[in-house]
View 1 (cartoon, rainbow, N blue to C red):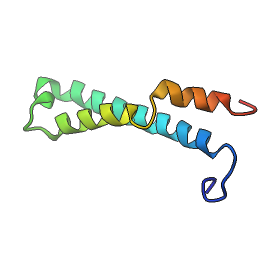
View 2 (view 1 turned 180 degrees about the vertical axis):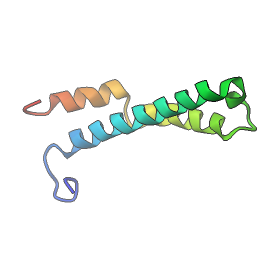
View 3 (view 1 turned 45 degrees about the vertical axis):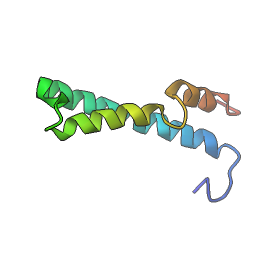
View 4 (view 1 turned 120 degrees about the vertical axis):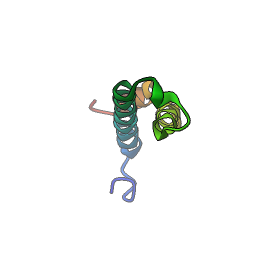
Length: 77
């Protein structure tokens, strides 16, 4: 909604959402890997695909630290 209305701090909102979603996806993938053990790394298990995607997406379109810096740089933060 903020992006449609061109809110001045919409980019910071997007950065905050990206960090939260990326960290949640990576934590879920790591937890699943811990549960399944070494077989989770094999190509036969979809988990290996999901952990690679979670790692890649966590740093895509800006690292988590860069996104956190953008959130903290917004006025009133």
